[in-house]
Image (cartoon, rainbow, N blue to C red; front, side, top):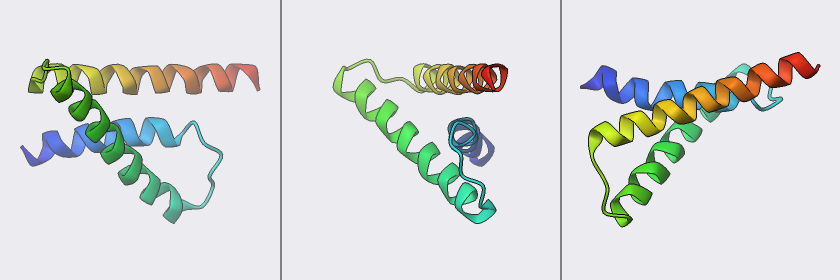
Length: 80
């Protein structure tokens, strides 16, 4: 359970931080946690209010966000 929670927070957080231009390692680490928690909270809250919350849907949504952020980063690298 701890590993699953860590993956749900760290992977989307890392994918989203890679979209920024922050170079400081400590700040990047803090942003990974902050963005990961914020994303997980926003997804869970939205699903709860829409009455469609389930842990499976939450995991899939976080995976879609992570893949989307990775694809956006790949596009950034191709452009530059």
